[in-house]
Length: 378
Image 1 (cartoon, rainbow, N blue to C red):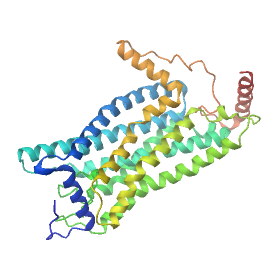
Image 2: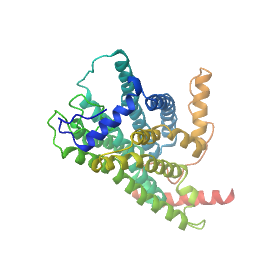
Image 3: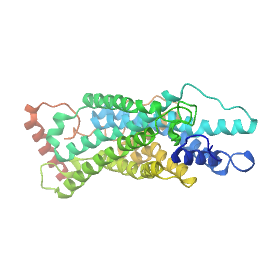
């Protein structure tokens, strides 16, 4: 597909239009092999991600009611962001759009436009930002639990965690408002998330707007959260390496499985989203991009919205037990039992998210000594 020489298209929009054309149309006007492969991949991602994330919501909700830990509320927010990504990014951009394009090409139908593009663009980028920023308070929560356990008991509790998650989602919606004017959205172009960085051919957009929006998106959705992840996770790892059994809080009691889940989630996010962010910044200043790279980068990045369930099952025995009980109840058509069979008899941990006043710190210390004695007896 050759770009029109009469339109004042930037090199970025030229490369994007060439990529979109090579992805959707093959030889003879039919769908290309890469289009069919990506359609199968994203359909599988959608049908695998929605049930597993729904199951994760159920299990984490029960754990949050039972354990009263603020970290479960952050994980609930992260799971909700993953579901939003699957519903408003993967479904319209990578499943419905190729299907409509194939149908329109096969039946020779006219191209249609809709007024839903700007709201959809805002919702997509808000979900993308939320998937990164919900993990930031979770990282702070785990850092305080590992490095300042006594202060953690007074700072972190479920009600505050729910308010923080709601604030993060609201702030992400506000940060996504500029993307309602993403170039290419207002003139009925590609959907906002697929990488169509057209500078508004025929739409009167400012040519400096694409680069500024790309930098703003990459900074807010990847660079800043990843810096927070790296700094705080490094602090947690260094603290755990310096910890020993003779301290007041043993390592197992101070962190727990949630810290391991945090390290896995943040590491996967950093690795999976790096190709897409790097390619987006590369597109700002270079004219030609090999056609498979944008699609492969999107495939790798959006995989992060599906793998968290398997991470939780691999790391947490309590989560596996809860998932087994929910699945067994569904298979046997029975109501889900009120409590889990494993882990319900455990005593109150020193990092549980109960709101304890500062004047009750001696009581917390006594509880820590009791737990240390119990761990030494095991």
